[in-house]
Length: 247
Image (cartoon, rainbow, N blue to C red; front, top):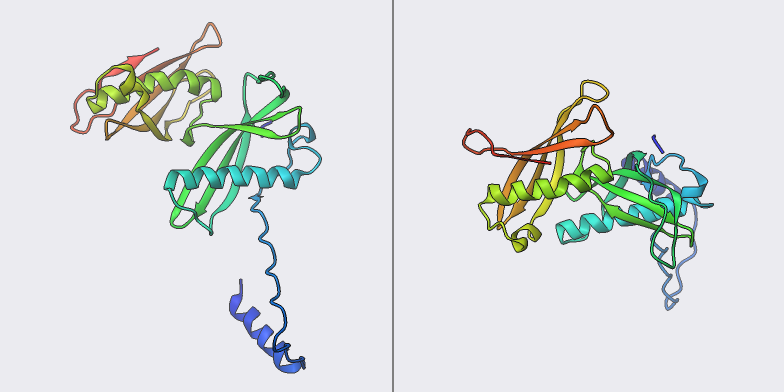
């Protein structure tokens, strides 16, 4: 897949109430139940293949919105009743993931959903790798926040390189425990590719040992095979030459 005028409304309600007689409410009548809250949906989601979204596209939109809102709540540590979710598009998830442990087997279709979550003073771009099970429901894996051009596989390959650079930049121990303590933030496109097969750069933020570090990730497509070379440069705070790690 690639692919209020409130014041006027209030005035109208007041006018209608003044012109329409009404019966007094029973003194001891039972309380009227509140209308159930409608699940959030993703604005501007657009069509998705039926094999992916299923027979009820609204159900997929509601599920996707719930995943995004839950992820944002986990990030902030507090619910946001005003949160809204809008689609920024969908991109291919190559290579496709077609199998999974029982009892579900993935349908041979998946995609990366790019979503804008806004509310309570925040606006974040969240990205999810989504695939649908033959048993009906969807599954997702959260990718880096932000506007990275990396697909799921390239991002998977680049994360250990970025983590090592973040640990080094934070001055942590280089043991496995330090590597496991790395918490990734968002990605920001720094330099776009100038054409097919040209390199590009992104700024990835993360923290380790209580210190925040930004690394400059350089992605260079290999000219003779479908692979991509990856390097990470620690963005200096004092203007010194950044250290590099690559793969």
